Image (cartoon, rainbow, N blue to C red; front, side):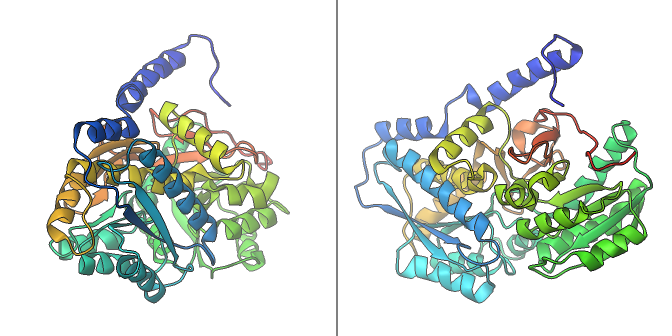
Length: 446
């Protein structure tokens, strides 16, 4: 249910919210305009293209995301080149398929981009695997690598050897904030009277990927502190299309809440289709995958009412909405700005940092690439996904509100609810980015 138009206290809040969002970025200089200004004020460095290497999962189980990551990079390349590239040098995008596989394939893709394509930087969304393969490639070649693996393993790697991994940046927060963030969100929903669960039980369903497991473990470990009981902790394989055994366990002891941290959108869609054959009075939360168009396309009406969260998603403010509108106009109604916006934002941030550093470095040009990395580490960039500001200790983006109370200094951990299968979910938390109120899903019988 969207907020109305009469001037209530809520609307006064929204007015001030719009003012904040305007001051946070839309009223300032956009990244393309900033690059254009720098390009005009500095002599061109030449016309040789700067190669942006993109190791992306273009085939396999997470190819739906890989396609969006490629689209986001293509859109950013077009925009940056339209204003003169980086100090007069155009960008050229080269993609290598990581095949939704592990470290060997991912690392090989990265090495081809450096050694064959002469990539000055590696920019990705997320890849599967341990998260260590591409930082290793970047360190060996002394290039900048930006990714959204959303793994605490990245933070640990940087802490273990910041000198070696100076060029690796996780441009979103780690997944460690998802578990406690979910519990906190549910507690606030209940305490505010917006949701009254049948009981305090949470059923947790995870998958085989470290990202999913870490989130599930955090929910299980911290549930009691928030007044919840984990009544089921189930692990499934990927891909999973038959949810009968898991649903049978859920129906034998119906929980008030179900948290699915297994994030493959096609698997989540099958869960909802089979859940809706005999739904329970359980509030369903799904990790990340439900934010993608592919989930709604497969699940259809069964997607409506589902909650999902992401620490990097397109906001529904002036900046985010403009990006989403432009993105869909460029790539079609089935395109997913939540995916493409990740790499789009990363490449714009890289371009600004490289321009500020006096140009992009080639592979093995460590001195120049360190300058670019230094500029990235100090950059505060307001993207369509929120504010990208790097924690120098972990070289991951700060999370709002978990790490900072200032929404202009952290990337928001946003919770959304799908109202219609034809539209992306509406953000219901946190302020000031919320645009809709939580609604009890239609499958609830009472």
